[in-house]
Amino acid sequence: MPLPKKISDRQTTSPYKVFGAIALLVPLLLNISVSIGIESGDLMSALPDLILPTRTTKSNQSFCEALPVSSGPQGRKFVHVFVSNAGHFPFLHNVLLSMVNASLSWRPVVFAVGSGVCHMLRDLAEVKLKDYAVCYPYLGRLLYQLRRDEPKSFEQIQPFLAKSNTTFLNDTIEETIARFDEVDSTFYGWGSTEHKFLINSKLYALRDILECGFDAFVTDTDIGFISDPLPYFDIDGPKGHVIAQTAPASGYSMNINSGFMYWRSTNDTIDLIRDIITVPPFWHIDQSRVNDRIQNRSTPYSLLDSYKFPQGNRIIGRYEKGVDTLADAVVAHANWNSKFGEKEAMLRKMGLWFLD
Image 1: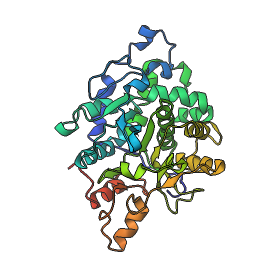
Image 2: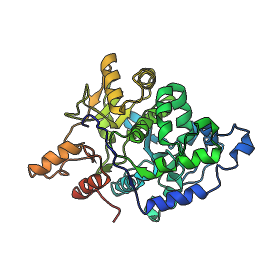
Image 3: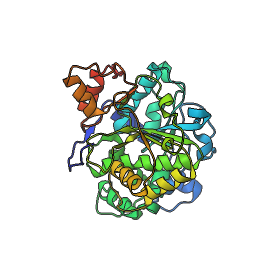
Image 4: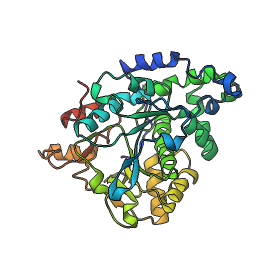
């Protein structure tokens, strides 16, 4: 990706925002302060690790036990995770349809940053998506870790949540949840503070899964699957421990695209992701953090073929040259643009927009 610029490209999606608003009316969280005795305004406690899946699970399952685990390269167990708010839900919806269309064999998990996503996912009309994904309400777990590991980043998100000059800790639980609605239901352009919050969430998702002892397949939602990528992750030795899409001409220290990565769960990779999260500078673009720390630690890694796993600038270049972009592609990534309509148009052009 190009170096981020300060822009404001907020687009609240429709009709998905309607579902997000309805989801806020569900009284799932409103009585938690009474039932578990938390302090007023403590959002981390207000959003416990519950499971709201599209399939039936028990609400008292631990985090690791709730993850849908599949068999990956060399028989290793892996978890495929998306991190999404309600504002990006059309892309989440679309990428799940692309997975079904590509006949992929595993079940992904969605870490929902906000209260709308799990209800929207559960209410999808397509029969083929019924019970396809597990949705985990991730906001409470995320904010707890963010406040602990990146206190400066936690402070920076507060002004974008506040409705008034009241402080975070003085809000009631209901007010705190309600004021997160805009962050939940809005599509944010590249470079905004809210967008940084959402994309850095992937780092915490990655760490959580690796610490459960599972390999982690972390992908953005603005992608489309054409065929199975798992065979391309079968790389022996340390260079197979971190595998990523190539991000040529990204402006970062290396060419690792953090929006499409497969990490093996090893002591070294767990130490690496902890390092990425906890070593300053805080609140930086996730891709920069990943590239910088891997470079500084001289960590071995592998980059995927940029023709089989094209990202936005490669896709644009191939179309300009008259090359059939999907002729040899496995997964396409509609990045290198920040606007909702541009991402949708790129996926449409490649025949990877399925919502119509």
